[in-house]
Length: 320
Ligand code: AN0
Ligand code: CP
Image 1 (cartoon, rainbow, N blue to C red):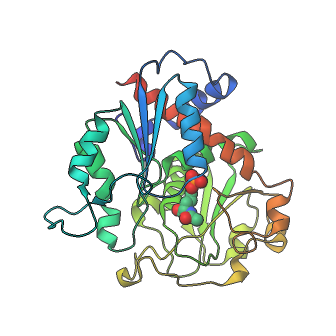
Image 2 (cartoon, rainbow, N blue to C red):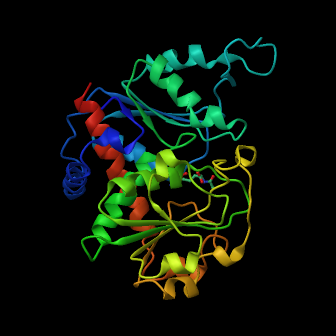
């Protein structure tokens, strides 16, 4: 595997899940695979889980790890070609990327949507430059449009907790005070469409996800109706994807707190498990009661980030 971006990059989900559970049984069994190999993890944005779980995954495989917080200590980077660099940016991404590539064997990058320009975000302008100019395999640690390490961990978690062969999985929008990217819901939708689940998305009008990710998934604008008989509730806020109105891209269209997942919502489900990628704002996305309930699996879900990252790094090491 040379790029980890889409669900198609991992191949068969059954095989990937088997590999994940095998690694979970003994996460150190491939220690020799990463000897004298270096993973470079580059963060343009904050992170708790991705930073720690991916670092741990690399250590599981016997790799060395370098973590770079671009905004703390590196030079401010210009990303546009042709710019006269007489401002505050000291270095161009076009030099920085191959330089970073020269110190490592595998690169992970976190670079969120900027919301400045829908086309730049959805064309993955930054990550594609890493793929093109680093000379290394690149895995996405949440880009402008996708968060595949999260979606893979979510799939592993659903597989572990499901009580029927084909569970009903509901992705629900929930309110949030700041405009958030679509990367998590995009990848979750993409992976759930590829998995053997009954997948439903619910959100207020205007929040339609990009068709390349949501595909033919059922969309229900009635949140309570969508929750009926659900086995998994996956809550997430996202800002306007700009599918129907490009001028609204990245905007907050609703702050309606009746969409906050609370006990009233969970009561109409089939005793559903509650999931969220974290970090989560309590009593905006989900009430204290629901996230603290025995049905909440947000902590094992986060723990599975180590497993998804170990599978992905293992696949990349095997292909070096
Ligand atoms: C980010 C997001 O919504 O994409 C990261 C989630 C993993 N969340 C925040 O910025 C709060
Ligand atoms: N879920 C997730 O990616 O968390 P972080 O932003 O803390 O890495």
